[in-house]
Image: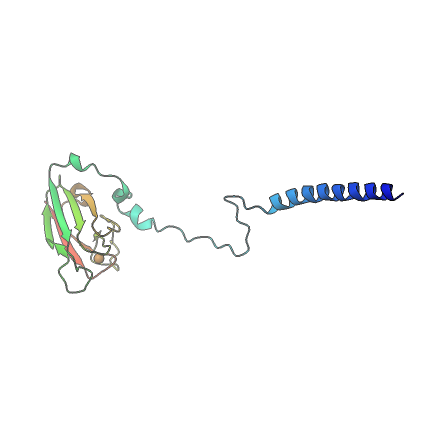
Length: 171
Ligand SMILES: [Cu+2]
C-alpha cells in the first residue's frame, strides 16, 4: 500500500510541475512588454517635434544636404568665439554681402551652439521664414544658398542668443 501511495504522490507532483510550467509560460508571455505597445497608466505621449519652424523655412531647406561643390561662389560668416556673451562681437562680418549664386556658410567658432535665423528677433512674425540654419554645434557649419534668401538686405539673429544680430545682403 505504501508503494502505491508513493507512486500517486510522485505522479501528482510531476503533474503539478507540468501544470505550473504551462501556466507560467502563458502567464509570463501575457505580461511581456511588446515593442511599440505601452499600456502603462503612467504613459505620457511626447510633445510633437518642433518641426513647424523648419517647415516654414522654405520647406525645411536647412535639413536638406547641400552640395557645396555646386557653388563656385562662397561667402563665409564666422560666429566668433565669445558670441554668447551679450555685447561681444558675434557674426563676422556683421554685415555680409553675397551674390545670388553664392552659398552662404556660417562657421561656428564658438564653444556653444548658435543659429543664423532670418528676422529681427523671436518676436518677428517673419522669423525663420526666409532661412534658418537651426542649431549649429560648436565647431560646425551650416549653409544656405543665397538664392533661397532672395535679393535685398536680410536681418538675422541667433535663436539661442536673440541679442546676436547680423545682416546678409544678396545682390
Ligand atoms: Cu547664439
